[in-house]
Length: 308
Image (tube, rainbow, N blue to C red; front, side, top):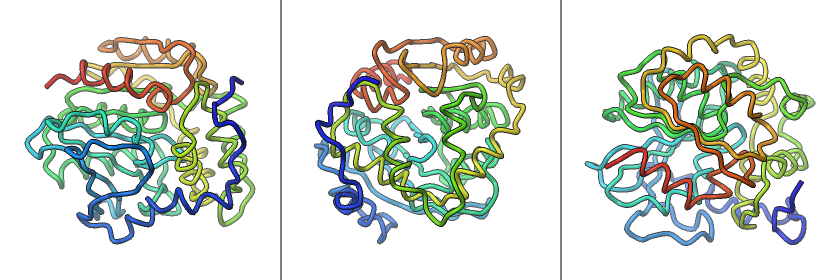
């Protein structure tokens, strides 16, 4: 695999405290400004604000917002093992006239970690309730990896809750590959092995990413309870959802890195054959997280597709 540009391996257990400061700042939570979540520079006109919400589905989710409340809504959904932090390289690039919601899915970050309920539609029903309770008017839903499966589910069962989809590193189903199988073969323990968290996140990266951001996303993966990985593999793996994708009517932008080790080109072709409203863009020399590795290009493509 191509070097990730970090220069040396992270000393995870000694250095995660620094990265975790941004997480700890959220403990006060409701409507508290997010400062210091990383050393990534931010546009002061797009300050993030942290919140929690108890949903009618029974779970409490953390989320952050930025931008004008009357702006076009963009709703961001992260991948497995991540949190809203996954979008830290994108959010500073989004103009203030958009109203951004970046949600942490159940089982991740500071959101609730229920023992069960990790299928595509379990996540989708949470986000449908989130949209309803906050009275968000047909957002553009932007997903990465697991978040794209959730976005697909929303577009199928609640098409009136989405205006457009942007799907990054998106399978039509959980890929049946050796790399994905290894993700779900964790031993039963209270927390995920920090070495697994590091290796998992780095395995998805091809182009260089900043070291401070790498620490944050590794810290997020290390926070997951082991049973969440198991339940994700069990619930997502048993789904037969592919034929439902033809019901998606929302205009859809699918973006994919040609060095993606988790989602193959064959998976993308399957997705594109089902979602008739989709357009496709390939990012060369890019891994699974196009928004991590090419944040400026990804954001430009997102905004051009979303419109004002």
